Amino acid sequence: MKVNSFLSLNRNMRVLLIESFIFLGCARILKSLPFSKVAPLLGEKMQETYYEIDLKNLEEVKNITNAIYIASNYTFWESKCLVRAIAAMKMLERRNIESTLYLGTNKDSDGNLAAHAWLRTGNYYVTGAYEMKDYTMIVKFAKKIRKKNIR
Image (cartoon, rainbow, N blue to C red; front, top):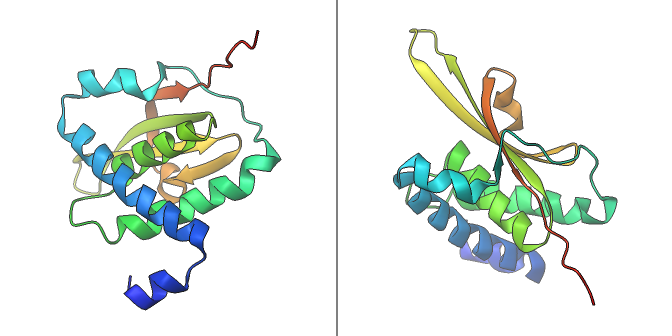
């Protein structure tokens, strides 16, 4: 992204892009670790969050989606589906928004195993929606937000 283009964005989007860039970097580091160490950070295995989105969060979620996709095009590390999904999950978690991360597999035209990750909050797919139809979901993780008791 050119500097002038970045500066022409509203303040909220500039902050989201910077946050996305940071979380994409953190997610890339997590991806380099053994998955058995990362999986507990992703939420409850084989659980899902609700399919209803709180409409007051929808605009923020869409902005996060845009920021993740834009920032991932400017990282100097690989920021594909799993990195995007983890970064978006962590951004949603910061805002107390639940999400479910899915991992799926298929075989490509040469018979090689391929994998894909996508993230959903409510009925809105934050990352990986376009390709998910080509994959069979093998595991999912629900990042549920625990309500704090107020006394």
